[in-house]
Length: 140
Ligand code: CMP
Image (cartoon, rainbow, N blue to C red; front, side, top):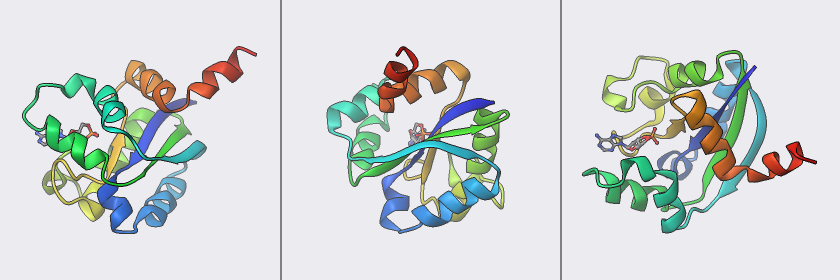
């Protein structure tokens, strides 16, 4: 079993489609191992997206991600990272395949409804960013 970090972003929260997205996650066979809502501060959002610092879309991304509380989840499944990326669809919703979450719920390349880790090392970092208590529990 593999784990990945999923985020339901402020555009989807504002549209009140969180329940529909969670239904689709469960129907696709993921186990939601942990979940919570978080209102990111600007500093926290900058820390999470540090790899994009300096890119032209960075400031918009930070203000977008701090608009409302977000939902963060640890998803578990065989090949969870790739499977969740398939279910999300491409970063730009205009290019996303029919049946993907971004095709159905996203607005633009920045306001794209959901986030997923892109590789095992990223998943580890991103899960610890939001769920550091899991690390502490693992060491008890
Ligand atoms: P996410 O999967 O959360 O990872 C980085 C985010 O930056 C991405 O989704 C989009 O919200 C945003 N993003 C990535 N590329 C672009 C781009 N070219 N223009 C605007 N926003 C982008």
